[in-house]
Image 1 (cartoon, rainbow over the protein chains, first blue to last red):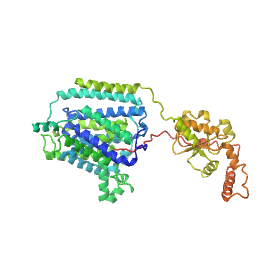
Image 2: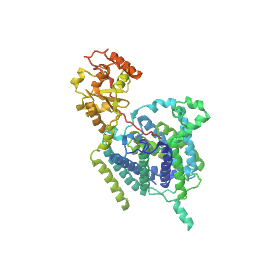
Image 3: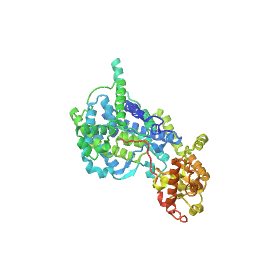
Length: 196
Length: 177
Length: 204
């Protein structure tokens, strides 16, 4: 019954080694899908390459369905999985700031690491920026502490908050994702091609 | 002949849906084995915390934020995310090697200079780093891994990031197209 | 959209629809008969009257005494600080909520220990941990503390120490009048709302 390490089916000492391996798989897939190119990533926002949309939502939908099936058949205890906590205002404001950074930098931390690995210097600049930004946050923290710790809603899931069945929620996400893929394909055909 | 093949190969990317399924499987495995999702900004944070601690330990202890991540019995770099990110570097490097995409360069739109690109990239990273601390995660940790377990906060963060990025990329369109 | 996506898309839709339509999850946490037999044969579930008395006197907050007899017997006499959950109600939602609180060790008792033991078996099958049985029940309680004979002259010092302890317990408990059992037991055990327990740490 998973998750394996929290239930001691795999010794906890292996956790870091496993992290390394999973990270390798993560990095490989990201790079192989083209996430090591900032101009390619930005294509989602300008319509000339929707790779980010496609990979992200396919991965989200695959993992949601996969985990729920595993939970249903008793292979994994959903209650033991780490659910990202919801601090509403922090999530929104942090998201907006990150979006701004995304639009300028063309990367997110994970993809910037991949790009650094293949030699992109702009990704290196981005990563250095990450460190500076985090450092600045430590200074700003005393001012932001209230916001940071406020509006805590718990480790809640979206279906819980919305009051609907979680399987139904996933179904809606699937429909939404398929819809977005469809629209994206049409848009991509109509948009002027960009060489990168 | 070989030149052509090489060029072709470096433009070879996985089909995005296929890549998405693979990524989804990696996520499922990650949750199944470790009970947690993937992440990225956390490793950057650990690096910053470690640096602050070694360069200015007094500030580290005094800082409300940094002190949360320092403990006497565990080095901040000895955490799951740091190892995972090391793996990300390795995996991406491997893929880059396989597809012949290893090449030091500054990737930028022909409409701006590479110097400008480097400055803007740094600014972008700065904003993103700051925002990732506010939201307690980035696209990998909060958005992607959060969504895998249907986290409400994860979905909100994802919408915030993508919505805001759409807005700002059109405002700063000259940087890209 | 090209033709080649028809199958993956159909597969995706089918998988998500099936998930919606599947019947509610079975409870997979029921113990196998072999495991149950093993648990029954082990005596680790028993708690002695001495230990319970000691913990009561020390006001150990982790101790939660549950009287599984009916409420009439409970009101005639019950152990101090105990909560009455008759065995017939033990599987009800409110009882289950009480019993699933963390940080408490639930000790069931009855007149002898047969009813308490039966309760224990039922709850073990439900997968509850931290459940125990008072060995000998109330009969043993009385025998240990109220009708216990002094040890023989030739007994060793340990037996004498135990006897002293038990006399002390009797004095402690007979301070409370026998005909008004602790009805404040309801306040002692607070029901905390079920929190999500994440065994894994995480974050980004």
